[in-house]
Image 1 (spheres, rainbow, N blue to C red):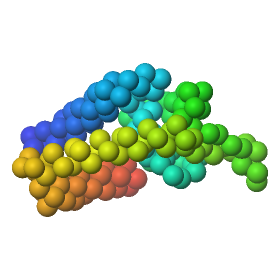
Image 2 (image 1 turned 180 degrees about the vertical axis):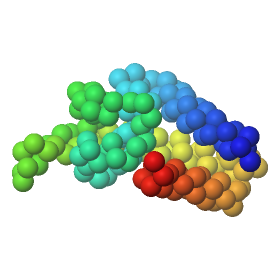
Image 3 (image 1 turned 90 degrees about the vertical axis):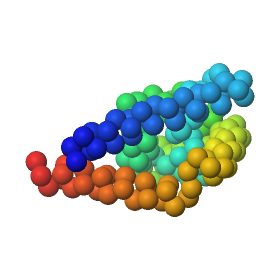
Length: 150
């Protein structure tokens, strides 16, 4: 069990890095040079919502990245619009600009092509459902461990 557990951890880490490489390859193919793969992932996860930087950080999709720095760069490069909350001037909310929406649509098309390719015989939907169920169980275990088993 221990070896399988360690292999799962290594695979998850490698898959995340490879996934970021897929996004980078797509950005290169599209000729987009003013945004990186992690910033693109941040945009995609904001999508049509309005979020605070704290909410983005809490989602935890940005392994090893500085979310505040990336948000600043996304605003500077015109992918995000940032607004102060009218109720709490210390809090800012971000949402996608038209440029950000356009890029997330292109990334969504990439994800659809990837899903279609996978369905063409690499993996079926039930296998993905089973993998996801297992990964969620591990995530819950780790969350519980962090919260209660220290």
